[in-house]
View 1: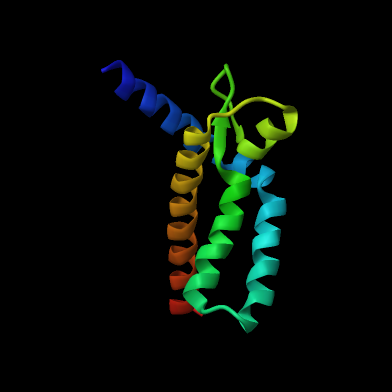
View 2: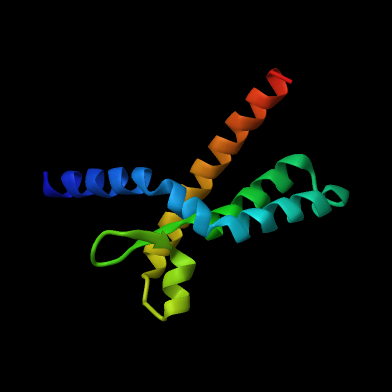
Length: 114
């Protein structure tokens, strides 16, 4: 039961701190948008979408400090903190999935209601 409670604590903290993670990820989100614009010439829409979401997820994927504060993984790496490779991969993949689902949802709503 303790591990389930820990999971929910981290989930709630991450949801509440998501706007901060997005602010920290703004340079990566801008890079994803620039990549999406220029990659229209040589990549299919689906490939470009997944790659752009991956770039944005690189800047948003959280890692937690000893106080359970989520910061993007890249900030920990810049500071010289060690983050486990498995943890980084899992955090990145979950973030990539969430970003892709959210962007897909937003684009569907925008296309449906011009």
